[in-house]
Length: 232
Image (cartoon, rainbow, N blue to C red; front, top):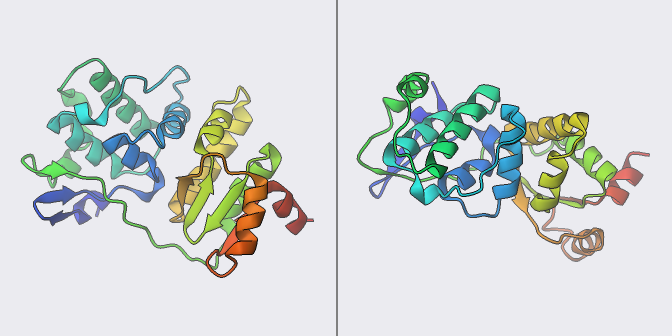
């Protein structure tokens, strides 16, 4: 069973369930809030291995019903080079003012499209996916990279707060090894049920202050310095 088959009708709207591996990128692709645009662009660029790809000019509101249905069908699959390239093809079509999708592209997702109605509004579902809270292993790769890059990271429950604009810049690094490591670390978080949340301007000092002020509310907060101390 694909994840799209678990979608639900609510008040006349259809909520297709996206694969958790897409994280907040699914919301950006469906609604384009701009909060995750740079991060989504960098993730798609790396996954699709299209270093020149950019989302400049993309507006989710300009998706035709046909394009939106296909986008939902693709997002039911886990992130990989193939699915990322198919999404970038839709994005380019929107940027170019096109409203149709190719039959060849559609043919790859026929099973998912069969269960997505054509006459209702599709809305992104931000449903949290289950993960084992006691298992911190999925966090370690990103926290280790954040330590190396001096990026502050705050973890609260299943939310991983980080300045996404700065993260996206590192995801576009000329260092291919760093790009690949970040991509794998992010996908590992997504697959485990964690959600990256944008926290613009987050500083190491703020991380330490938040940790002191809200120790009961916060499961854990990390900055590069505190994470390094914990592992040495």
